[in-house]
Length: 390
Ligand SMILES: *Cc1c(COP(=O)(O)O)cnc(C)c1O
Image (cartoon, rainbow, N blue to C red; front, side, top):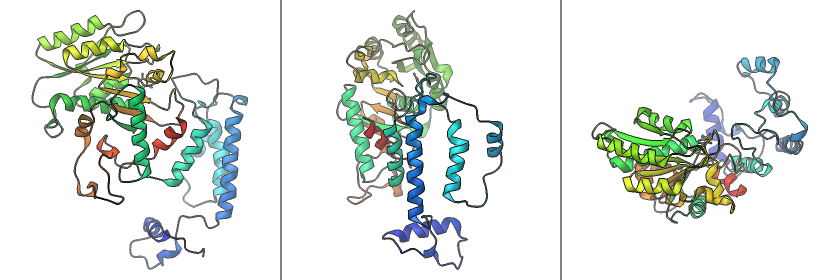
């Protein structure tokens, strides 16, 4: 038996609980998911890392993509094995059957579907984050500190106030959805969380005919319904026609509906068209509706002096959704929602439960936790790979 490590007790009890019947008479202390032999583990891990570095360094020598061969598909059509195998064997399976059949977006000639390629540094940070295995839903640790620093940095980048609020999510589809929820709560008040959408006039939202499909989906998921999303016609450059936007909002209001949200695109997925954000901001302000920007890849034009004019006016948005896994090439997945009014963001998601109560000090301390800014409670350390990349 290997010598006990400091702090290993809780871990061993936890592992034992997962594998033992509740009242087994086994001594709990000799069961663990740690390697039996750390030296072998170290050697296998070093080799795996080295192989993956080769894989990235020689990406251009391979075809961009190949379909998983029938033999490989057949292999994974069976249930996973019931008996444990040595890590070395499982790594060999990875090398033979999994690694050659990935998406291909790490290849320099992969140009499809607005995919990011990731980076070698990104790969390294995923490993470091897994080593820490931090739960970044909240509490008092460095993961929360880092995510807050990212929020402050993005607020600065986009010309938002320093107190703006933000949260890492899986991607822009999720960020847009959360943005719609914040806009809805801002329009109807916090009671809509409890009462639902029953009372009051029909909410309506506006976006361009070229907007990403996840905007309509966000309206569906929010319960508002995609029928209440108006797809405004675009001009020859693919940008939303703002005279039409203005007219559509005015018409709905005349007919007794409640326009609450306009979603502008900073880079459409079909053609890379940018809506004129400054004028959208004027229209949104005139009609007192929430101004959200879907900037999945295009918002990051703000990082570039020559491209920044494309997103002029983004600093006037109420909220911005964007991805780090596209143009910034952070490994999947990493999207972000930035909200100007931190109180409105928090009041959409925060709730009080005994197990979420803040303590005055210790690991349970802290004011605003990421779990107050979105629906996820347990969440990984996405902030680390974004921080390293930036
Ligand atoms: C990619 C994209 C989305 C969806 O983002 P995901 O990260 O894939 O969820 C939304 N809008 C636009 C304009 C996009 O390019």
